[in-house]
Amino acid sequence: MSLSSLLLDELRACAGQSGKSLFVRDGQRSVRCEAVHCERFAATVDELVLETPELAAATIAQLEAASRDLASRVNYLLEPVAPIESDAAGCTVQMRSNPPQKDDNGWRYYELVLRRGGSVALARYERQPGQPRVRVPAALTHEVIGRLVNDFELTAASV
Image 1 (cartoon, helix red, strand yellow):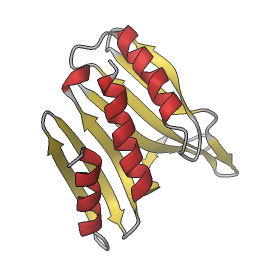
Image 2 (cartoon, one colour):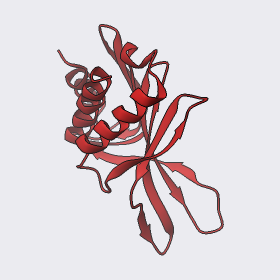
Image 3 (cartoon, helix red, strand yellow):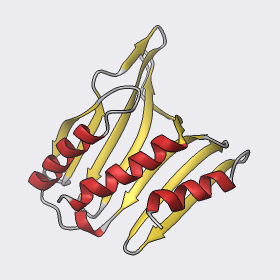
Image 4 (cartoon, one colour):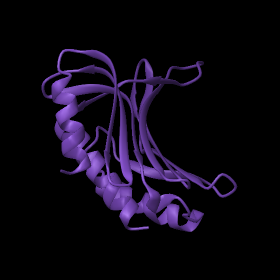
């Protein structure tokens, strides 16, 4: 069974529940999903993280290439995502919604971070004028969660 199938089974089993920390493993890869609330077909997710050995020794150039690959795959979120910053010292690449969602209350955006050591993580943030950004739950259908896990895996395998 794939990681995405394992995670979706866990999410379905938690329908109607709140504050669930889900963890599934398939071989050396694992996914952690911090679900604020689970429903039958969707969940509000604080964070979705793939841990994988393919990124354990990745160079910054490999992470940058992987972030471009991931941006081309993940074209189904509320906003398109793109690499915005690389940190050679920390060996991380940060991606964000480009452009972010903007309304009278401020900006909301997805942030994805690829890290040497072996992770790809997604979270959603909100920034109101004059205030620091805060993490907010991302409302995602089960289908989108499954696609994200699959795309994280495909991107990691390309490194």
